[in-house]
Image 1 (cartoon, rainbow, N blue to C red):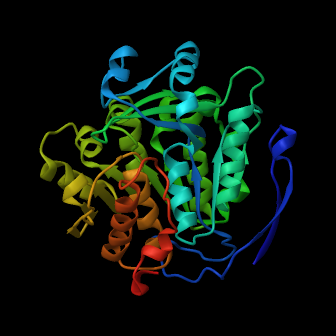
Image 2: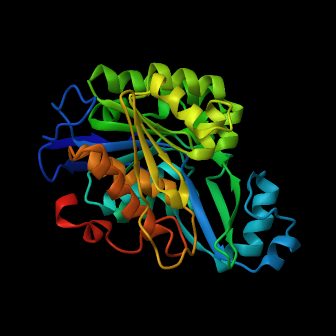
Length: 366
């Protein structure tokens, strides 16, 4: 298949004509996918477009910078500048953000993918754009703000592999439906949306409209809950979205417990079975649980020799699962691919795979 599209970003450095060519026609039998005509992408993601700045630090650094170990904090511009100056030159800069990590993982698994996010015409915006392009991901940015810089996530990783994250969301949170390429959404088998974007009403509206456009073409709509604190802030909106629009949900155990306001995992799963078609719940070293209205199935994690950095584990699990899902595999095999992808990313620093993930898969899972 061949499709010509113009990237509708306001900044000249992303204005270009691109020929999108699927490597093979989309023919997989996918649960919830009602129409395979016109599919150009396996998955299109929508999420925060952030640049990850990742550095290994000693515990003393956290104390000096008054950082709470293992926390995820939202910071303002001044704090972002201070931390960047303290850590930036020691860190590795890559395109990041939860959904972008998942899309990058899918690209490493051989999928045809695209990503929609919002960056500004600045140095870090160019880092984000060029990095995704290098990975083979089609990136569509909405119009940048002239006075709000590109978002960034400064991640300090201590020797025990614990990550302490300080995120300046910048222009990424200003994503609105006008920034979303609706035609791109309609050409994906699966739309994958990131819960972190839910902090602004414009983004919530963009999610619902994008889901409506995807469903209007018979596509699958998926969501990752992203963070338990994010769920706490938007529980009612998430519950409504899961009931009304979501075909495939990704969450970790803490996020699921927060969604249903319980400390009992079994109670949360029982409620989830009533509200979601398919859900994947990750439980760290316990593996994952695949939940449908008629079944609950546990899939073990893949063992690793040493956990170095858990950044991106859930994102890469989602990548592996979605790769299997869009290949038409059964849900257990999808979760096994997710476990392989997650195991690779926690074995080193950073939320992106360091090797081609497709090469890690046994023949029957490719």
